[in-house]
Amino acid sequence: MEKYEHAYGADQIQVLEGLEAVRKRPGMYIGSVSKRGLHHLVYEIVDNCVDEAIAGYCTHIEVKIEPGNIITVEDNGRGIPIEIHPKTHISAAETVYTVLHAGGKFGGDSGYKVSGGLHGVGASVVNALAEWTEVTIQRDGGIYFMKFERGKTVEKLTKIGDSNKTGTKVKFLADDTIFETTDYDYTTLEDRFREIAFLTKGLNISFEDLREETPKKVEFCFEGGLRSFVEYLNQNKEKIHTEPIYIEKKDGEVPVEISIQYTTAYNENIYSFVNNINTVEGGTHLEGFKRGLTKVFNEYARSHNLIKEKDPNLQGEDIREGLTAVISVKVKEPQFEGQTKTKLGNSNVSGIVQAMTVDALSTFLEENPNVGKTILEKCISASRAREAARKARELVRRKSALEVTTLPGKLADCSSKVAEECEVYIVEGDSAGGSAKQGRNRKYQAILPLWGKMLNVEKSRADKIYNNDKLKPVIQAVGAGIGSDFDVSKIRYGKVIIMADADVDGAHIRTLLLTFFFRYMRPLLEQGHVFLAQPPLYKLSKRGMEDIYCYTDEELEETFEKIGRDNVSIQRYKGLGEMNPEQLWETTMNPENRVLVKVTMEDAMKADRIFTILMGDEIEPRREFIQENAKFVKNLDV
Image (cartoon, rainbow, N blue to C red):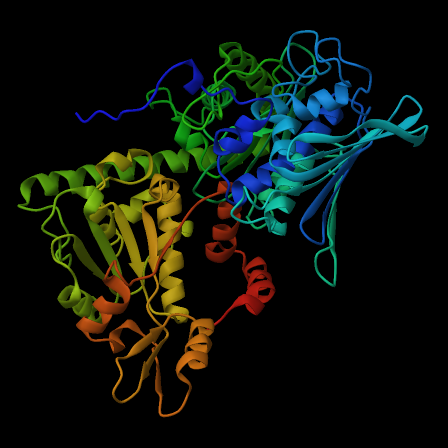
Protein backbone atom coordinates (compact mmCIF):
# COMPACT_ATOMS: atom_id res chain seq x y z
CA MET A 1 0.00 0.00 0.00
CA GLU A 2 1.34 3.42 -0.95
CA LYS A 3 2.47 5.65 1.94
CA TYR A 4 1.90 9.38 1.94
CA GLU A 5 4.64 11.48 3.47
CA HIS A 6 3.11 13.95 5.94
CA ALA A 7 3.53 14.83 9.56
CA TYR A 8 1.28 13.10 12.09
CA GLY A 9 1.83 14.37 15.61
CA ALA A 10 0.07 16.28 18.34
CA ASP A 11 -0.05 19.39 16.14
CA GLN A 12 -2.21 17.53 13.60
CA ILE A 13 -4.91 16.64 16.13
CA GLN A 14 -7.60 19.23 15.49
CA VAL A 15 -9.75 20.54 18.33
CA LEU A 16 -12.84 22.42 17.19
CA GLU A 17 -13.81 25.09 19.69
CA GLY A 18 -17.37 25.98 20.65
CA LEU A 19 -19.81 25.51 17.80
CA GLU A 20 -17.18 25.09 15.07
CA ALA A 21 -17.84 21.34 14.98
CA VAL A 22 -21.48 21.98 14.11
CA ARG A 23 -20.61 24.23 11.18
CA LYS A 24 -17.92 21.82 10.03
CA ARG A 25 -20.21 18.75 10.05
CA PRO A 26 -23.81 20.02 10.12
CA GLY A 27 -25.21 16.70 8.87
CA MET A 28 -24.16 15.00 12.12
CA TYR A 29 -26.45 17.32 14.07
CA ILE A 30 -29.46 17.94 11.83
CA GLY A 31 -29.33 14.97 9.45
CA SER A 32 -28.74 16.91 6.22
CA VAL A 33 -28.33 20.39 4.77
CA SER A 34 -31.30 19.89 2.44
CA LYS A 35 -34.79 21.25 3.11
CA ARG A 36 -35.29 18.57 5.73
CA GLY A 37 -32.38 19.91 7.75
CA LEU A 38 -33.54 23.48 7.18
CA HIS A 39 -36.98 22.69 8.62
CA HIS A 40 -35.30 20.92 11.52
CA LEU A 41 -33.98 24.28 12.71
CA VAL A 42 -37.53 25.53 13.13
CA TYR A 43 -38.64 22.32 14.85
CA GLU A 44 -35.86 22.62 17.43
CA ILE A 45 -36.85 26.13 18.48
CA VAL A 46 -40.57 25.28 18.50
CA ASP A 47 -39.88 22.10 20.50
CA ASN A 48 -38.35 24.24 23.23
CA CYS A 49 -41.62 26.18 23.42
CA VAL A 50 -43.62 22.96 23.45
CA ASP A 51 -41.56 21.67 26.38
CA GLU A 52 -42.68 24.77 28.27
CA ALA A 53 -46.28 23.89 27.35
CA ILE A 54 -45.90 20.27 28.50
CA ALA A 55 -44.49 21.58 31.76
CA GLY A 56 -47.62 23.71 32.13
CA TYR A 57 -46.16 27.20 31.59
CA CYS A 58 -46.85 28.02 27.92
CA THR A 59 -50.28 28.33 26.28
CA HIS A 60 -49.44 30.09 23.02
CA ILE A 61 -46.72 29.76 20.35
CA GLU A 62 -46.48 32.12 17.40
CA VAL A 63 -44.38 31.21 14.35
CA LYS A 64 -43.74 33.48 11.37
CA ILE A 65 -41.85 33.19 8.11
CA GLU A 66 -40.94 36.75 7.25
CA PRO A 67 -39.72 38.08 3.87
CA GLY A 68 -36.23 36.82 3.14
CA ASN A 69 -37.02 33.50 4.90
CA ILE A 70 -36.43 34.94 8.35
CA ILE A 71 -38.01 32.78 11.08
CA THR A 72 -39.57 34.19 14.25
CA VAL A 73 -40.76 31.91 17.07
CA GLU A 74 -42.33 33.45 20.18
CA ASP A 75 -43.94 31.84 23.24
CA ASN A 76 -45.49 32.98 26.51
CA GLY A 77 -43.55 30.52 28.67
CA ARG A 78 -41.31 31.34 31.62
CA GLY A 79 -38.50 32.84 29.53
CA ILE A 80 -34.95 31.46 29.46
CA PRO A 81 -33.11 32.06 32.76
CA ILE A 82 -30.95 35.20 32.62
CA GLU A 83 -28.68 34.90 35.69
CA ILE A 84 -24.97 34.06 35.41
CA HIS A 85 -24.32 30.34 35.01
CA PRO A 86 -22.00 28.98 37.74
CA LYS A 87 -19.87 26.90 35.32
CA THR A 88 -19.71 28.98 32.15
CA HIS A 89 -19.62 32.36 33.95
CA ILE A 90 -21.86 33.90 31.30
CA SER A 91 -25.62 34.30 31.40
CA ALA A 92 -27.64 31.08 31.35
CA ALA A 93 -29.41 32.37 28.24
CA GLU A 94 -26.12 32.86 26.37
CA THR A 95 -24.97 29.45 27.59
CA VAL A 96 -28.05 27.78 26.07
CA TYR A 97 -27.25 29.33 22.67
CA THR A 98 -23.46 28.91 22.58
CA VAL A 99 -22.64 25.68 24.45
CA LEU A 100 -23.51 22.26 22.98
CA HIS A 101 -25.75 20.07 25.14
CA ALA A 102 -26.58 22.92 27.49
CA GLY A 103 -30.21 23.25 28.57
CA GLY A 104 -32.80 22.62 31.23
CA LYS A 105 -33.62 19.05 30.18
CA PHE A 106 -30.80 16.92 31.51
CA GLY A 107 -30.65 14.97 34.75
CA GLY A 108 -33.28 14.05 37.32
CA ASP A 109 -33.52 17.55 38.81
CA SER A 110 -33.89 19.39 35.52
CA GLY A 111 -36.33 22.16 34.71
CA TYR A 112 -38.61 19.74 32.82
CA LYS A 113 -40.30 16.52 33.89
CA VAL A 114 -40.39 15.28 30.28
CA SER A 115 -39.04 16.79 27.09
CA GLY A 116 -39.22 16.31 23.36
CA GLY A 117 -36.12 18.40 22.87
CA LEU A 118 -33.79 15.68 24.12
CA HIS A 119 -33.96 13.88 20.79
CA GLY A 120 -32.71 16.94 18.97
CA VAL A 121 -29.72 19.21 19.12
CA GLY A 122 -31.08 22.31 20.75
CA ALA A 123 -30.84 26.04 20.34
CA SER A 124 -27.03 26.06 20.19
CA VAL A 125 -26.96 24.11 16.92
CA VAL A 126 -29.67 26.30 15.40
CA ASN A 127 -27.56 29.31 16.41
CA ALA A 128 -24.42 27.77 14.90
CA LEU A 129 -26.12 27.20 11.55
CA ALA A 130 -27.79 30.61 11.33
CA GLU A 131 -26.30 33.67 9.65
CA TRP A 132 -27.61 35.59 12.64
CA THR A 133 -29.85 34.93 15.64
CA GLU A 134 -31.64 37.41 17.91
CA VAL A 135 -33.14 36.36 21.24
CA THR A 136 -35.51 38.49 23.30
CA ILE A 137 -36.48 37.30 26.79
CA GLN A 138 -39.19 38.64 29.08
CA ARG A 139 -38.63 37.52 32.63
CA ASP A 140 -38.20 38.80 36.20
CA GLY A 141 -39.83 42.13 35.35
CA GLY A 142 -37.49 42.98 32.47
CA ILE A 143 -36.95 42.65 28.71
CA TYR A 144 -33.53 41.26 27.73
CA PHE A 145 -31.87 41.05 24.31
CA MET A 146 -28.82 39.28 22.84
CA LYS A 147 -27.53 38.69 19.31
CA PHE A 148 -25.29 36.13 17.59
CA GLU A 149 -23.67 35.74 14.19
CA ARG A 150 -22.87 32.20 12.99
CA GLY A 151 -22.87 31.00 16.59
CA LYS A 152 -20.66 33.72 18.03
CA THR A 153 -21.99 36.30 20.49
CA VAL A 154 -21.97 39.82 19.03
CA GLU A 155 -24.26 41.44 21.60
CA LYS A 156 -24.21 40.18 25.19
CA LEU A 157 -27.47 39.76 27.08
CA THR A 158 -28.60 43.28 27.98
CA LYS A 159 -31.72 44.65 29.65
CA ILE A 160 -33.58 46.88 27.18
CA GLY A 161 -36.82 47.54 29.02
CA ASP A 162 -39.37 46.59 31.66
CA SER A 163 -42.21 44.07 31.39
CA ASN A 164 -44.60 42.19 33.62
CA LYS A 165 -44.94 39.43 31.00
CA THR A 166 -42.86 36.30 30.47
CA GLY A 167 -41.73 34.46 27.37
CA THR A 168 -39.01 33.98 24.76
CA LYS A 169 -38.78 35.30 21.19
CA VAL A 170 -36.20 33.85 18.80
CA LYS A 171 -35.53 35.33 15.38
CA PHE A 172 -32.98 33.80 12.98
CA LEU A 173 -31.85 33.60 9.38
CA ALA A 174 -30.48 30.24 8.23
CA ASP A 175 -26.97 30.43 6.79
CA ASP A 176 -27.11 30.10 3.01
CA THR A 177 -23.45 29.05 2.96
CA ILE A 178 -24.47 25.91 4.90
CA PHE A 179 -27.86 24.93 3.42
CA GLU A 180 -28.69 23.92 -0.14
CA THR A 181 -31.70 26.21 0.07
CA THR A 182 -33.12 28.56 2.70
CA ASP A 183 -36.61 28.57 1.20
CA TYR A 184 -39.06 27.07 3.70
CA ASP A 185 -42.02 24.95 2.61
CA TYR A 186 -45.21 26.30 4.16
CA THR A 187 -47.16 23.03 3.95
CA THR A 188 -44.40 20.99 5.60
CA LEU A 189 -44.26 23.34 8.58
CA GLU A 190 -48.05 23.63 8.74
CA ASP A 191 -48.42 19.83 8.96
CA ARG A 192 -45.86 19.63 11.78
CA PHE A 193 -47.48 22.42 13.80
CA ARG A 194 -50.92 20.82 13.40
CA GLU A 195 -49.47 17.54 14.68
CA ILE A 196 -47.88 19.27 17.68
CA ALA A 197 -51.19 20.95 18.54
CA PHE A 198 -53.00 17.60 18.43
CA LEU A 199 -50.40 16.08 20.74
CA THR A 200 -50.42 19.00 23.19
CA LYS A 201 -54.04 19.38 24.21
CA GLY A 202 -55.10 23.02 24.59
CA LEU A 203 -51.90 24.56 23.20
CA ASN A 204 -52.56 27.34 20.69
CA ILE A 205 -50.14 27.54 17.76
CA SER A 206 -50.45 30.34 15.20
CA PHE A 207 -48.44 30.13 11.98
CA GLU A 208 -48.08 32.93 9.48
CA ASP A 209 -46.26 33.17 6.15
CA LEU A 210 -45.54 36.80 5.22
CA ARG A 211 -43.36 36.16 2.15
CA GLU A 212 -46.08 36.64 -0.46
CA GLU A 213 -48.22 39.68 -1.22
CA THR A 214 -51.19 37.85 0.32
CA PRO A 215 -50.06 36.40 3.69
CA LYS A 216 -51.14 32.93 4.79
CA LYS A 217 -52.18 32.35 8.38
CA VAL A 218 -53.52 29.38 10.30
CA GLU A 219 -54.21 28.69 13.96
CA PHE A 220 -54.33 25.32 15.67
CA CYS A 221 -55.77 24.50 19.07
CA PHE A 222 -57.38 21.14 19.87
CA GLU A 223 -59.05 20.71 23.24
CA GLY A 224 -59.88 17.14 22.20
CA GLY A 225 -56.21 16.19 21.93
CA LEU A 226 -55.74 12.78 20.33
CA ARG A 227 -59.49 12.40 19.88
CA SER A 228 -59.35 15.37 17.51
CA PHE A 229 -56.24 13.87 15.87
CA VAL A 230 -58.05 10.62 15.02
CA GLU A 231 -61.08 12.53 13.73
CA TYR A 232 -58.76 14.48 11.44
CA LEU A 233 -57.05 11.32 10.16
CA ASN A 234 -60.41 9.65 9.46
CA GLN A 235 -62.22 12.65 8.03
CA ASN A 236 -62.37 11.08 4.55
CA LYS A 237 -63.14 7.53 5.68
CA GLU A 238 -66.37 5.71 6.51
CA LYS A 239 -66.44 5.08 10.25
CA ILE A 240 -67.78 1.99 12.00
CA HIS A 241 -68.49 3.95 15.18
CA THR A 242 -69.07 7.71 15.25
CA GLU A 243 -67.00 8.81 18.25
CA PRO A 244 -63.33 7.82 18.64
CA ILE A 245 -62.55 5.81 21.77
CA TYR A 246 -60.39 7.92 24.09
CA ILE A 247 -58.10 6.68 26.86
CA GLU A 248 -56.03 8.89 29.15
CA LYS A 249 -53.96 8.16 32.24
CA LYS A 250 -52.06 11.09 33.69
CA ASP A 251 -50.93 9.64 36.98
CA GLY A 252 -48.00 7.26 37.39
CA GLU A 253 -44.49 7.29 35.99
CA VAL A 254 -45.57 7.23 32.33
CA PRO A 255 -48.57 9.41 31.32
CA VAL A 256 -50.41 7.73 28.44
CA GLU A 257 -52.96 9.07 25.96
CA ILE A 258 -54.59 6.87 23.30
CA SER A 259 -57.42 7.36 20.84
CA ILE A 260 -58.76 4.76 18.39
CA GLN A 261 -61.51 4.52 15.80
CA TYR A 262 -62.45 1.77 13.35
CA THR A 263 -63.29 2.44 9.69
CA THR A 264 -64.45 0.26 6.81
CA ALA A 265 -60.95 0.42 5.26
CA TYR A 266 -58.79 -2.70 4.93
CA ASN A 267 -55.51 -1.24 6.16
CA GLU A 268 -54.37 -0.20 9.64
CA ASN A 269 -52.95 3.20 10.51
CA ILE A 270 -51.27 3.43 13.91
CA TYR A 271 -49.08 6.38 14.85
CA SER A 272 -47.02 6.43 18.02
CA PHE A 273 -45.30 9.31 19.80
CA VAL A 274 -42.95 9.71 22.74
CA ASN A 275 -42.68 13.22 24.20
CA ASN A 276 -44.21 14.47 20.91
CA ILE A 277 -41.51 12.68 18.88
CA ASN A 278 -42.98 10.59 16.05
CA THR A 279 -41.58 7.09 16.70
CA VAL A 280 -41.89 5.87 13.12
CA GLU A 281 -40.24 2.55 14.01
CA GLY A 282 -42.59 1.99 16.96
CA GLY A 283 -41.13 0.51 20.12
CA THR A 284 -42.26 -0.75 23.50
CA HIS A 285 -45.26 1.59 23.78
CA LEU A 286 -46.63 0.34 20.45
CA GLU A 287 -45.94 -3.29 21.35
CA GLY A 288 -47.84 -2.89 24.62
CA PHE A 289 -50.81 -1.33 22.84
CA LYS A 290 -50.99 -4.08 20.21
CA ARG A 291 -50.79 -6.86 22.80
CA GLY A 292 -53.46 -5.22 24.92
CA LEU A 293 -55.76 -4.70 21.93
CA THR A 294 -55.43 -8.32 20.81
CA LYS A 295 -56.05 -9.64 24.35
CA VAL A 296 -59.16 -7.51 24.94
CA PHE A 297 -60.94 -8.35 21.71
CA ASN A 298 -60.23 -12.08 21.89
CA GLU A 299 -61.46 -12.25 25.48
CA TYR A 300 -64.56 -10.22 24.58
CA ALA A 301 -65.29 -12.39 21.53
CA ARG A 302 -64.95 -15.60 23.61
CA SER A 303 -67.09 -14.36 26.48
CA HIS A 304 -69.87 -13.27 24.09
CA ASN A 305 -69.67 -16.44 21.96
CA LEU A 306 -68.64 -14.51 18.84
CA ILE A 307 -65.78 -16.99 18.43
CA LYS A 308 -66.65 -20.64 18.91
CA GLU A 309 -64.73 -22.75 21.41
CA LYS A 310 -63.13 -24.89 18.70
CA ASP A 311 -62.07 -21.87 16.60
CA PRO A 312 -58.61 -20.30 16.97
CA ASN A 313 -58.12 -16.83 18.39
CA LEU A 314 -58.18 -13.81 16.14
CA GLN A 315 -54.71 -12.63 15.18
CA GLY A 316 -53.48 -9.11 15.79
CA GLU A 317 -53.65 -8.16 12.12
CA ASP A 318 -57.33 -9.23 12.01
CA ILE A 319 -58.16 -6.98 14.96
CA ARG A 320 -56.23 -4.02 13.52
CA GLU A 321 -57.86 -4.06 10.08
CA GLY A 322 -59.49 -0.68 9.50
CA LEU A 323 -58.08 0.69 12.76
CA THR A 324 -56.82 4.24 13.10
CA ALA A 325 -54.99 4.82 16.37
CA VAL A 326 -52.69 7.39 17.93
CA ILE A 327 -50.63 6.50 21.00
CA SER A 328 -48.77 9.21 22.90
CA VAL A 329 -46.64 8.60 26.00
CA LYS A 330 -44.50 10.92 28.09
CA VAL A 331 -41.28 9.30 29.33
CA LYS A 332 -38.87 11.11 31.62
CA GLU A 333 -35.72 9.53 30.19
CA PRO A 334 -36.59 7.92 26.84
CA GLN A 335 -34.17 5.41 25.36
CA PHE A 336 -34.25 5.40 21.57
CA GLU A 337 -32.92 2.72 19.27
CA GLY A 338 -33.39 1.53 15.72
CA GLN A 339 -31.99 2.76 12.41
CA THR A 340 -33.35 6.29 12.71
CA LYS A 341 -33.25 6.49 16.52
CA THR A 342 -37.03 6.73 16.59
CA LYS A 343 -37.87 3.41 18.25
CA LEU A 344 -38.63 3.49 21.97
CA GLY A 345 -36.63 0.96 23.97
CA ASN A 346 -37.77 1.54 27.58
CA SER A 347 -38.94 -1.93 28.65
CA ASN A 348 -41.22 -0.75 31.47
CA VAL A 349 -43.42 1.22 29.08
CA SER A 350 -44.76 -1.89 27.33
CA GLY A 351 -46.46 -3.33 30.42
CA ILE A 352 -47.84 0.06 31.46
CA VAL A 353 -49.47 0.70 28.07
CA GLN A 354 -50.76 -2.89 27.78
CA ALA A 355 -52.40 -2.86 31.21
CA MET A 356 -54.01 0.51 30.57
CA THR A 357 -55.28 -0.57 27.14
CA VAL A 358 -56.80 -3.77 28.52
CA ASP A 359 -58.46 -2.00 31.43
CA ALA A 360 -59.93 0.94 29.47
CA LEU A 361 -61.03 -1.03 26.38
CA SER A 362 -62.64 -3.82 28.42
CA THR A 363 -64.75 -1.22 30.19
CA PHE A 364 -65.64 0.49 26.92
CA LEU A 365 -66.76 -2.74 25.22
CA GLU A 366 -68.94 -3.76 28.14
CA GLU A 367 -70.57 -0.33 28.19
CA ASN A 368 -70.99 -0.18 24.38
CA PRO A 369 -71.97 -3.71 23.30
CA ASN A 370 -73.33 -2.65 19.90
CA VAL A 371 -70.06 -0.99 18.96
CA GLY A 372 -68.12 -3.99 20.28
CA LYS A 373 -70.18 -6.42 18.22
CA THR A 374 -69.81 -4.34 15.02
CA ILE A 375 -66.04 -4.14 15.43
CA LEU A 376 -65.77 -7.88 16.14
CA GLU A 377 -67.81 -8.71 13.05
CA LYS A 378 -65.26 -6.80 10.96
CA CYS A 379 -62.38 -8.55 12.75
CA ILE A 380 -63.89 -11.99 12.11
CA SER A 381 -64.47 -11.07 8.45
CA ALA A 382 -60.81 -9.97 8.25
CA SER A 383 -59.76 -13.31 9.75
CA ARG A 384 -61.66 -15.23 7.07
CA ALA A 385 -60.14 -13.05 4.33
CA ARG A 386 -56.67 -13.60 5.80
CA GLU A 387 -57.21 -17.36 5.66
CA ALA A 388 -58.40 -17.06 2.05
CA ALA A 389 -55.32 -14.96 1.24
CA ARG A 390 -53.10 -17.58 2.89
CA LYS A 391 -54.61 -20.33 0.75
CA ALA A 392 -54.24 -18.20 -2.37
CA ARG A 393 -50.64 -17.44 -1.46
CA GLU A 394 -49.84 -21.11 -0.88
CA LEU A 395 -51.51 -22.00 -4.16
CA VAL A 396 -49.29 -19.48 -5.94
CA ARG A 397 -46.23 -20.94 -4.21
CA ARG A 398 -47.19 -24.52 -5.11
CA LYS A 399 -47.71 -23.54 -8.72
CA SER A 400 -44.40 -21.72 -8.74
CA ALA A 401 -42.59 -24.77 -7.43
CA LEU A 402 -43.99 -26.89 -10.27
CA GLU A 403 -43.38 -24.35 -13.03
CA VAL A 404 -40.06 -23.86 -14.79
CA THR A 405 -40.19 -20.14 -14.10
CA THR A 406 -42.09 -18.07 -11.58
CA LEU A 407 -41.99 -14.95 -13.75
CA PRO A 408 -45.03 -13.57 -15.59
CA GLY A 409 -45.29 -14.45 -19.28
CA LYS A 410 -45.29 -10.85 -20.55
CA LEU A 411 -42.14 -9.91 -18.63
CA ALA A 412 -39.07 -9.41 -20.81
CA ASP A 413 -36.41 -10.00 -18.16
CA CYS A 414 -32.83 -8.72 -18.17
CA SER A 415 -29.80 -10.99 -18.28
CA SER A 416 -28.12 -9.69 -15.12
CA LYS A 417 -29.16 -11.25 -11.81
CA VAL A 418 -27.56 -8.57 -9.62
CA ALA A 419 -30.56 -6.73 -8.18
CA GLU A 420 -28.63 -3.52 -7.45
CA GLU A 421 -27.86 -2.95 -11.14
CA CYS A 422 -31.19 -4.20 -12.54
CA GLU A 423 -34.33 -2.17 -13.20
CA VAL A 424 -37.82 -3.06 -14.34
CA TYR A 425 -40.00 -0.70 -16.36
CA ILE A 426 -43.71 -1.19 -15.68
CA VAL A 427 -45.13 0.14 -18.93
CA GLU A 428 -48.68 1.15 -19.76
CA GLY A 429 -49.96 -0.73 -22.79
CA ASP A 430 -48.65 -3.40 -25.14
CA SER A 431 -47.67 -0.87 -27.83
CA ALA A 432 -45.34 1.13 -25.57
CA GLY A 433 -44.20 -2.14 -24.00
CA GLY A 434 -43.15 -3.40 -27.44
CA SER A 435 -41.13 -0.26 -28.15
CA ALA A 436 -39.53 -0.44 -24.71
CA LYS A 437 -38.54 -4.09 -25.23
CA GLN A 438 -36.85 -3.26 -28.52
CA GLY A 439 -35.16 -0.10 -27.28
CA ARG A 440 -33.88 -1.27 -23.87
CA ASN A 441 -30.47 -2.42 -22.72
CA ARG A 442 -31.15 -6.13 -22.29
CA LYS A 443 -28.35 -6.62 -19.78
CA TYR A 444 -29.97 -4.70 -16.92
CA GLN A 445 -33.39 -3.41 -18.10
CA ALA A 446 -36.53 -5.56 -17.82
CA ILE A 447 -39.92 -4.61 -19.29
CA LEU A 448 -43.32 -5.53 -17.88
CA PRO A 449 -46.28 -4.28 -19.98
CA LEU A 450 -49.60 -3.75 -18.21
CA TRP A 451 -52.93 -3.83 -19.93
CA GLY A 452 -56.57 -3.40 -19.01
CA LYS A 453 -58.07 -1.94 -15.85
CA MET A 454 -56.00 -2.45 -12.71
CA LEU A 455 -57.48 -3.29 -9.32
CA ASN A 456 -57.92 -0.41 -6.86
CA VAL A 457 -56.36 -1.98 -3.75
CA GLU A 458 -57.79 0.78 -1.54
CA LYS A 459 -61.14 -1.03 -1.86
CA SER A 460 -59.84 -4.62 -1.78
CA ARG A 461 -58.50 -7.18 0.69
CA ALA A 462 -55.33 -9.20 0.18
CA ASP A 463 -57.17 -12.33 -0.98
CA LYS A 464 -58.51 -10.46 -4.03
CA ILE A 465 -55.06 -9.04 -4.77
CA TYR A 466 -53.46 -12.49 -4.96
CA ASN A 467 -56.11 -13.58 -7.45
CA ASN A 468 -55.99 -10.42 -9.59
CA ASP A 469 -54.49 -11.10 -13.02
CA LYS A 470 -53.34 -7.47 -13.42
CA LEU A 471 -51.43 -7.23 -10.12
CA LYS A 472 -50.11 -10.80 -10.00
CA PRO A 473 -47.46 -10.08 -12.70
CA VAL A 474 -46.22 -7.07 -10.68
CA ILE A 475 -45.97 -9.18 -7.51
CA GLN A 476 -44.14 -11.96 -9.37
CA ALA A 477 -41.77 -9.56 -11.13
CA VAL A 478 -40.75 -7.71 -7.97
CA GLY A 479 -40.31 -11.12 -6.34
CA ALA A 480 -40.49 -10.16 -2.64
CA GLY A 481 -44.08 -11.04 -1.65
CA ILE A 482 -46.73 -8.60 -0.44
CA GLY A 483 -48.16 -7.27 2.81
CA SER A 484 -46.74 -8.75 6.01
CA ASP A 485 -44.78 -11.27 3.89
CA PHE A 486 -42.97 -8.58 1.91
CA ASP A 487 -39.18 -8.85 2.26
CA VAL A 488 -37.39 -5.95 0.58
CA SER A 489 -34.08 -7.87 0.64
CA LYS A 490 -35.54 -10.29 -1.94
CA ILE A 491 -36.46 -7.75 -4.63
CA ARG A 492 -35.22 -8.70 -8.08
CA TYR A 493 -34.67 -5.11 -9.26
CA GLY A 494 -33.01 -2.16 -7.54
CA LYS A 495 -35.23 0.24 -9.48
CA VAL A 496 -38.94 -0.23 -10.13
CA ILE A 497 -39.82 2.39 -12.75
CA ILE A 498 -43.41 3.30 -13.64
CA MET A 499 -43.59 4.50 -17.26
CA ALA A 500 -47.01 5.81 -18.29
CA ASP A 501 -48.45 8.40 -20.65
CA ALA A 502 -48.72 12.04 -19.61
CA ASP A 503 -52.52 12.04 -19.75
CA VAL A 504 -55.47 11.22 -17.49
CA ASP A 505 -55.21 7.47 -18.04
CA GLY A 506 -51.47 7.52 -17.39
CA ALA A 507 -51.96 9.48 -14.17
CA HIS A 508 -54.58 6.94 -13.09
CA ILE A 509 -52.21 4.03 -13.75
CA ARG A 510 -49.46 5.72 -11.74
CA THR A 511 -51.81 6.40 -8.83
CA LEU A 512 -53.13 2.83 -8.80
CA LEU A 513 -49.61 1.38 -8.78
CA LEU A 514 -48.36 3.80 -6.11
CA THR A 515 -51.40 2.98 -3.97
CA PHE A 516 -50.56 -0.72 -4.30
CA PHE A 517 -46.90 -0.16 -3.40
CA PHE A 518 -47.85 2.04 -0.44
CA ARG A 519 -50.39 -0.39 1.00
CA TYR A 520 -48.66 -3.72 0.27
CA MET A 521 -44.97 -3.05 -0.49
CA ARG A 522 -44.30 0.03 1.64
CA PRO A 523 -40.54 -0.68 2.22
CA LEU A 524 -40.11 -0.41 -1.55
CA LEU A 525 -41.09 3.28 -1.21
CA GLU A 526 -39.42 3.86 2.14
CA GLN A 527 -36.05 2.66 0.84
CA GLY A 528 -36.22 4.57 -2.43
CA HIS A 529 -36.69 1.79 -5.00
CA VAL A 530 -39.67 3.31 -6.88
CA PHE A 531 -39.26 5.86 -9.69
CA LEU A 532 -41.43 7.63 -12.23
CA ALA A 533 -40.11 7.84 -15.79
CA GLN A 534 -40.41 11.28 -17.38
CA PRO A 535 -40.84 10.96 -21.15
CA PRO A 536 -40.42 14.18 -23.14
CA LEU A 537 -43.42 16.36 -23.88
CA TYR A 538 -42.06 17.88 -27.10
CA LYS A 539 -39.78 17.07 -30.01
CA LEU A 540 -38.34 20.02 -31.93
CA SER A 541 -37.15 19.37 -35.47
CA LYS A 542 -35.30 21.64 -37.88
CA ARG A 543 -33.62 20.80 -41.15
CA GLY A 544 -29.89 20.37 -40.78
CA MET A 545 -30.06 19.95 -36.99
CA GLU A 546 -30.48 17.03 -34.62
CA ASP A 547 -33.88 16.68 -32.96
CA ILE A 548 -34.22 18.36 -29.56
CA TYR A 549 -36.43 16.92 -26.82
CA CYS A 550 -38.03 19.10 -24.12
CA TYR A 551 -39.44 17.65 -20.91
CA THR A 552 -41.27 20.74 -19.60
CA ASP A 553 -42.91 23.89 -20.95
CA GLU A 554 -40.16 25.91 -19.26
CA GLU A 555 -37.50 23.91 -21.08
CA LEU A 556 -39.34 24.48 -24.36
CA GLU A 557 -39.37 28.26 -23.84
CA GLU A 558 -35.68 28.27 -22.86
CA THR A 559 -34.87 26.34 -26.04
CA PHE A 560 -36.79 28.82 -28.19
CA GLU A 561 -34.89 31.67 -26.57
CA LYS A 562 -31.54 30.01 -27.62
CA ILE A 563 -32.44 28.70 -31.35
CA GLY A 564 -35.48 30.79 -32.12
CA ARG A 565 -38.84 29.55 -33.52
CA ASP A 566 -38.21 30.00 -37.25
CA ASN A 567 -38.62 26.84 -39.33
CA VAL A 568 -38.92 24.69 -36.22
CA SER A 569 -41.58 21.97 -36.24
CA ILE A 570 -42.99 20.96 -32.85
CA GLN A 571 -44.40 17.53 -32.01
CA ARG A 572 -46.38 17.29 -28.75
CA TYR A 573 -46.23 13.71 -27.49
CA LYS A 574 -49.52 12.43 -26.13
CA GLY A 575 -48.42 8.87 -25.48
CA LEU A 576 -45.39 6.61 -25.25
CA GLY A 577 -46.66 4.67 -28.25
CA GLU A 578 -45.87 7.65 -30.51
CA MET A 579 -42.14 7.07 -30.02
CA ASN A 580 -40.20 4.41 -31.86
CA PRO A 581 -37.77 2.18 -29.89
CA GLU A 582 -34.73 4.38 -30.64
CA GLN A 583 -36.54 7.54 -29.48
CA LEU A 584 -37.84 5.86 -26.33
CA TRP A 585 -34.34 4.67 -25.44
CA GLU A 586 -32.74 8.01 -26.20
CA THR A 587 -35.22 10.14 -24.26
CA THR A 588 -36.62 8.00 -21.46
CA MET A 589 -34.52 4.88 -20.83
CA ASN A 590 -30.90 5.80 -21.45
CA PRO A 591 -29.35 6.53 -18.01
CA GLU A 592 -27.16 9.20 -19.60
CA ASN A 593 -30.15 11.24 -20.86
CA ARG A 594 -33.28 10.16 -19.02
CA VAL A 595 -35.08 11.99 -16.22
CA LEU A 596 -36.30 9.83 -13.32
CA VAL A 597 -38.29 11.10 -10.36
CA LYS A 598 -37.65 9.14 -7.16
CA VAL A 599 -40.83 8.53 -5.17
CA THR A 600 -40.10 9.26 -1.52
CA MET A 601 -42.29 8.87 1.54
CA GLU A 602 -41.38 11.61 3.98
CA ASP A 603 -44.70 11.47 5.80
CA ALA A 604 -46.73 8.25 6.03
CA MET A 605 -49.63 10.11 7.65
CA LYS A 606 -49.92 12.56 4.76
CA ALA A 607 -49.49 9.80 2.17
CA ASP A 608 -52.28 7.76 3.77
CA ARG A 609 -54.60 10.77 3.69
CA ILE A 610 -53.92 11.49 0.00
CA PHE A 611 -54.33 7.86 -1.11
CA THR A 612 -57.58 7.65 0.86
CA ILE A 613 -58.87 10.79 -0.85
CA LEU A 614 -57.83 9.75 -4.35
CA MET A 615 -58.72 6.06 -4.24
CA GLY A 616 -61.29 5.70 -1.44
CA ASP A 617 -65.09 5.55 -1.51
CA GLU A 618 -65.82 9.15 -0.48
CA ILE A 619 -66.50 11.31 -3.56
CA GLU A 620 -66.74 14.82 -2.05
CA PRO A 621 -63.17 14.92 -0.55
CA ARG A 622 -61.81 13.78 -3.93
CA ARG A 623 -63.69 16.57 -5.72
CA GLU A 624 -62.38 19.14 -3.24
CA PHE A 625 -58.81 17.84 -3.59
CA ILE A 626 -58.97 18.08 -7.39
CA GLN A 627 -60.43 21.59 -7.28
CA GLU A 628 -57.78 22.79 -4.80
CA ASN A 629 -54.89 21.35 -6.82
CA ALA A 630 -56.13 21.98 -10.37
CA LYS A 631 -54.15 25.26 -10.55
CA PHE A 632 -50.89 23.29 -10.24
CA VAL A 633 -51.60 20.94 -13.17
CA LYS A 634 -49.60 21.37 -16.36
CA ASN A 635 -49.68 19.57 -19.72
CA LEU A 636 -52.95 17.76 -19.03
CA ASP A 637 -54.49 15.99 -22.01
CA VAL A 638 -58.17 15.26 -21.56
